[in-house]
Length: 201
View 1: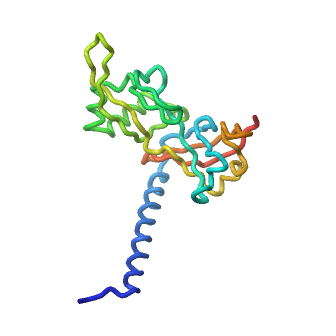
View 2: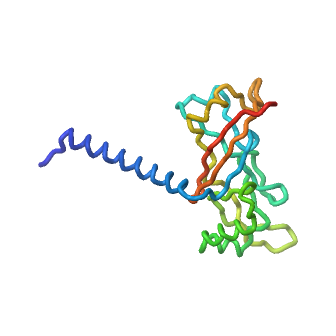
View 3: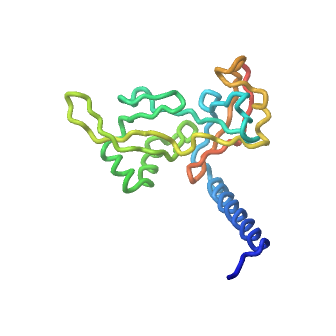
């Protein structure tokens, strides 16, 4: 019976690590290689900063929480927390659900046509669940419930972390420090931060 040598096992392990990193870095390069799909400047209101006591508890990385919600006018009967506020948009009817199921790329092109300002609206992948909306007297209507987005946390590059090193998040004792961040979204609809600076209170 053949046995694997320690060197061969180590070589395969290193090869797998290199391959996984190459795939990940290749995806990042492809996402950022074209003209950005969106370019927005956001503040601490949209990019939640973790409390300082929790910020570096697990590792030295830093990520900001992308706060999102279905707007109040469109939220329907479904309402949850501020940073994770899913809901049933009025526009997400049976026709759009069919588009989501059979031609998601077409829906992304339709959304960009409806919201053309790339400095105000960004497109991200998300999870939409089929649902029935029952308003009492009306017959139940097929619709969709937006439950999550694909990118809820956005990594802050080490070179840009300076303004946030001593910042305190809203709700934290002595917190409420303000900042702004320029966000780009690539052709894979994955966002990244290119500029971050403090803002006076």
